[in-house]
Amino acid sequence: MSGEITTRPVRKNSNRVVVAVCLAFFTGMVGMAYAAVPLYKMFCQATGYGGTTQRAEKQYAGRVLDRDITIRFDANTNGIPWQFEPVARSVTIKIGETTQAHYSATNKFDRPITGRASFNVQPEMAGAYFNKVECFCFTDTTLRPGETLDMPVVFYVDPDIVNVPELKDLKTITLSYTMFPVEKKQPVAPAAGSSNKVPDSEASLGG
Image (tube, rainbow, N blue to C red; front, side):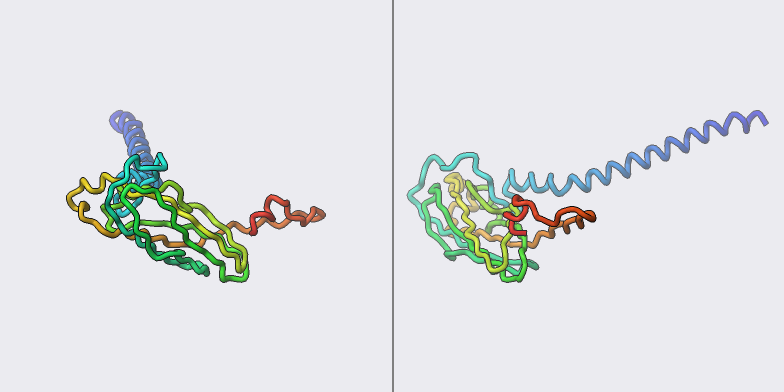
């Protein structure tokens, strides 16, 4: 009798510890899953891994080499009814020279559509040396039916690219964008007796 009375609290405490450890482990795994995507994105932006380009902290490379490199521009859509394409298919520039290129997007649908572009460069190793000064990537853009928008990108190729054995003889870099749709939340129905007028700040967004 005495043995049973003394062991029950111990077993209860043990069970509580096991439950607490399991909950902590589960919470940690969920947190890691949510953090994985932004951490991977930060890693790619910092290293150029996977063809991710760099965001330049300055507008100029500081030096321009007497060596040409050709930048090819590619555009794709994924599930969005837009005509999305580069204005020019390629440009030849000096390594280190700051250059502006343009993409064009037209909404072919009968209602406003919001899109967002992701990007990469090929070859992937060149991503660490392709510096964007200005870019429309990862920015939500809403176009009205039939509306066309000019989308500039300003960039330069870091002269240090010639110091990389695998890239020292590189002649061409391809900058590729893919445009995706962004689903916007439906507006909440107004309460009875309230005004149906849309505020000017919302109307000016075109959807």
